[in-house]
Image 1 (tube, rainbow over the protein chains, first blue to last red):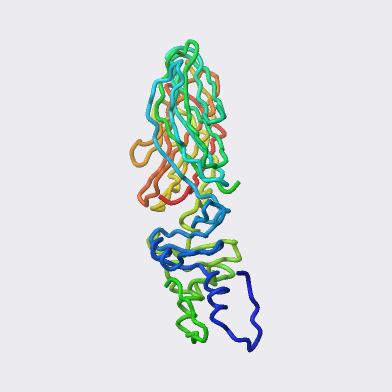
Image 2: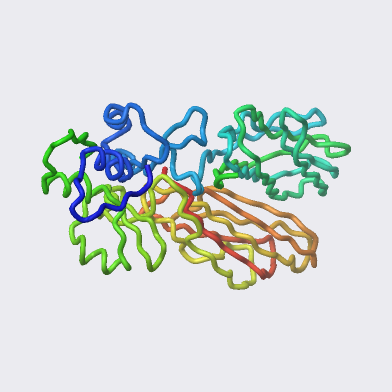
Length: 193
Length: 192
């Protein structure tokens, strides 16, 4: 479905409009229901605009199965932004966050976790990303007793349906316990791999 | 104005070209002025490409009034990037940055502030930074350090765009501190 150069006097056939012109336009629909009704069998590369969401989407085979997505070569932005519950960190590693949404294959994600940490005693605190394969990035910090410090623990992941990504924390040695507060987690789609 | 399947031998009418084809094509213009001249009253969903900026834009009613914007369902990137003026901190909240641009409804913004803080006399102290939107709100960061030592403090937050937003960041210290090499960035990170 690429381009065609019409010659002067050439017939302009229905198939030309249907194949060369209309299928390569930005097709406008009220919503996904109308789009599915009008184009029950889209082909890869079709482009649509949905007035309900303002969404500009392209039918792509970069997903399995093919689906309507924002332009593949752009960043899709914030996927999740949330506060994180305060929990005490102890010598037993505890889940701070689980099941972070980084599952679309072929996409790059950035996870940002920020938190204030206060150790009950002088010692060190640990925060790490946990995947099925093991831990992926580890933050180790030491600090005096009751001295707050805001930590920024950021990491990028390649999207995969099998991804199981979480964040765990612990407080070791003399820290014994540490208090978390004002935790924030953000997950961004940063673009294609 | 969705799709039409033309039948073999069917007449192509002006209305078909106007409604089904031209309006749904990606219209190419030299710049925004040329677009305004050619399409003085655009309709929602029209798509254009501007040669001057390389921008693909769609006329959307997600803004008020309706306007030409990048695809609404993508991240539009860096909106504001500035150095932060050095100041001397006290034990009262002081504005670190002026009002930040987070004002388009329906958009998520990420604000980042990174800054060096030099702890002054007379002792170890705790520095605090907090977001404000009219009143103190949102993320609150604290860093303790010895007198004469430095901290690089990074504070980030997601803000939902509102016309009335007055997003600022304030800082304070137990006694005294100075700052330098501060940087503030605002990103549009997609639709709400």
